[in-house]
Length: 466
Ligand code: ATP
Ligand code: MN
Image (cartoon, rainbow, N blue to C red; front, side, top):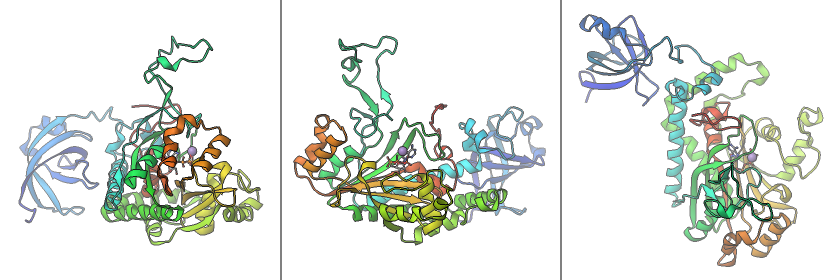
């Protein structure tokens, strides 16, 4: 049916009102506004006066082919109702460009800007296509607990969960905090990862994934870290490190391709926005590729796979290392890679996403499978342009004796983890998995530069507003 001539009802917020005649209305469903044409001679002047940027209105009218440029259709307004006025003199969102920092302070209102509505529509599309990807492949969505009684993974960077009265903390005779009196009769924290629980399920259901909030009390005030972020953690039985890498690469390509297809308008908007911003930057800080090019590039190219050892060699001999341009010079095998090193490999050396494998065991977690060389573990990190690490994963140590020994070496309480070790006692098998940081993915896909701008209400050191 041709839309012209139809009578429709629309509800939304006024984005602009000009010449006492043209209202640009947006209901959040897309970037585009609907132009309402108001014949002001037909309405009370007092009603017309109340139409302002931000006002919530309902209108009934007829869709007609637009006379003006800029839109195909417009609405000839027949009735107009105001739900909520918006006093322009105090409304923080003015029709001008606001800085990201300012918008972060009014995160409750920033959804109403083109940039943030585009970001959150894309965030939704990404979440949806992640579920779609796993569902199509026969994975089961697992809800791992948010409150955890194990601190094996995140010692030191976890948020304590307690109902103890902080003014009257109960102590044992030895002078320790008596967690027997706490809600769960033991110390508990917010989870840093759902992996260990996902492993338990994978060793029965075959292929599972989690997609939930995780919490880290690390004091990392960076544009890539949040204290509360969402993580996708698939875990697959009967799989090795190669299967794990293939799965991660397929997943990333699938979801990026799906957003390229389904969010064209929003992506184009963010692409153009970035192009504008780039013009303000000095030449040497500009992105070599535009947002859309980066996304297509990522979908079309095989990720480069190489060992940590080879990466160290490349970094050691790199120009920035020789010229002492790195904040953390690369000297010895065994040191952890910093974001500057990851980005050098991706952006300057290979110029494409990189998967690094076989890291030194002393910089990786206890559950990663030990390689024959006795020095490295079957770990893999995926590094992305502009982001650095986006995925961290590994093949898991499925051999009970090796796992126990490693846990003892790393002072992990073996008795408390007996539930985890049971999987290795009863029908263990090779298995692997990874964690994909959801906000790092949204950051990459939207081209934003700060992770605080791709989650509705960011939590970071010193800030838990809203
Ligand atoms: P980084 O070295 O960047 O801090 P990590 O090694 O601590 O990362 P993992 O513990 O392997 O990361 O977590 C898996 C994934 O979760 C990471 O690859 C990243 O995408 C994401 N991630 C980790 N920490 C954060 C954080 N504080 N905020 C947002 N995403 C995070
Ligand atoms: Mn970290």
